[in-house]
Length: 367
Image (cartoon, rainbow, N blue to C red; front, top):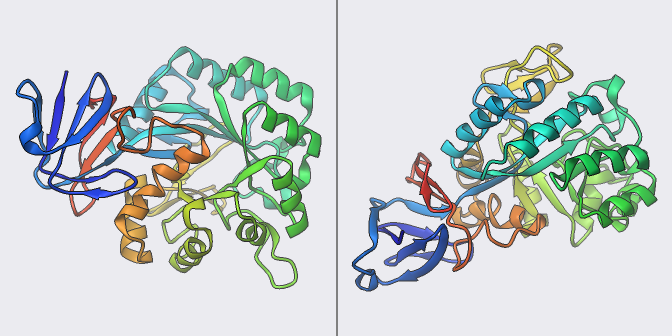
């Protein structure tokens, strides 16, 4: 079905366009045309002066819709989580698992493989190959060093589902990092106490990103700038950041953006309340914590992170949107999402100037 999205400001990921109509057909972006050029047979969607943007992409999220997926791995939980995320404007996400047992990892992989959802990009394993010193909310007893045989078994079972793994570079044999990189896994440094030198060595061995910049990592200090300093010094590694003014202060967001430019992207690190299994989360007014009070996850949506970037960090809306679309898609080597361009999948979010989501489309279908 040919659909024409009219009367909206279009943020393509490269330009901000007014006075044009967006055409989609068979689930893909077709063209941007003048209103007079819209074919008569097109179904008209009046966007009422709102903003039309690519669907948002979240590379680190643990739960939604009332479910923490690792604690309730089931088709029902997956569907509830996906529906809640899509409703918030996120049309693509990496379902993330914190440090847990291999049995839980395998069960979650099985559910994900047997129940594909158009919004699920794959799985992100945050741990268990991290540094106990920077465990944050992760379960100490389950943290370990990576072994090739275990990883081979896990990735074989995953069948391509696992897309990203967060590791502490100083806890990993460089040969394993290079092997994982060769398997097409996006390696991200996090929950790490790496020195500047150890972090740079990790980047040379295949680590291409940094997980929730500043949180659960070696500090930026003047005698050894640690993992943050290595991230700023390197000229290719990407970094995610949780823009809620809780995980990082708005000033840290501002400074990081100035230094990293198009290598800084947004995640939510959002969880759900849970009192079973390895990941325990207690809902607070503006965050989640472990029962002992340790910060354990956000209550963000990606749209609210975009809003905070604009309103509190002075980042222009088009650039804030790129931090939630173009840049994560580039890191993941996804060419058909995160942009409004001919041939891309018609994943769209329509929202007003108060950042309220009005409509969401996946492959051109209203959700």
